[in-house]
Image 1 (tube, one colour):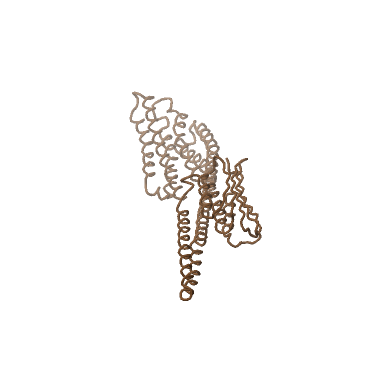
Image 2: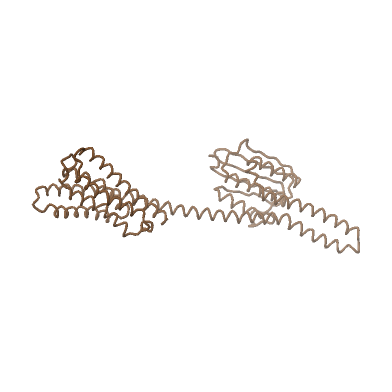
Length: 413
């Protein structure tokens, strides 16, 4: 944030310097046209005294002190762009050859654009009291300069004072407006910065939460494949070892069964690892990914699967990912734990809402239990649903199968 503000401050000073120089160059061109053949040393000296401080201002805007945001240098530059036009104008009052912009009003107009640049700089760097002090201070400074150059008896003194007072009022009105606008923009910028920090924090938390959930899912996958296989294999091999000397044929059968269990477990582990590596949504889209998921479940669990899917599923990538993971968790629970023979899978999208219903005719469980045995993924499914603004209802009784209803309002835009 500080680096951004330093960059904006430096850019503003450099922009002011180039505007000042561009204005003086344009003014020089106007005077060359106005004075034509009378463009003598006095006119040239007027422009040199105006241009040299502007070049100095430009040089200061590219110094390292500006990059370090040295307040002394910044204040000196604001003082330079404010005092120089006033001094030069009163030094050359009526000393220039007669021309439309060489009288009192013309010289006041000449200095006004540069003073407005100073006004904008003050409005940018200072708060409202500093802005008011600037408008009053510039007017008081010019009155002092007028008295020093003209004296109290100059017949044009009231005109000078009137011009100064009118400009002071204009500076107060315009300066206060610009200052308040800048302060409002800075408050909005600070508010956006705070919101952005909160959003980054939320995104980081969400990413960590997603990683944690995926780790839990991986843990469950490995528990349901490798751990079950190895634990069953250990029991069978211990039994085979006990029968080896007593009943060799029984031991041989147990070893054959163990080999088959190893092959089945290896296939399941490979399938789980492939599912962890693959990105079916990116490769196939949600509809085909769900169809493949159900086809794989039917083969592995020897299940009859009846599915109803819409012709087209138009969801954002984040919602597609959540819907697929919820469906995947529910189907895997059925395959591994439900001892079911049939799955009814229905995905309906209507009235800007999504409804996913997954039913099985398995052994069921008591939904009042916090963590029903063999259904470790239910909590993860509910967390995923709540994270995207959806809800999950689970209806199950022992011996009566299970129905999972996932509802996501506002999913279809």
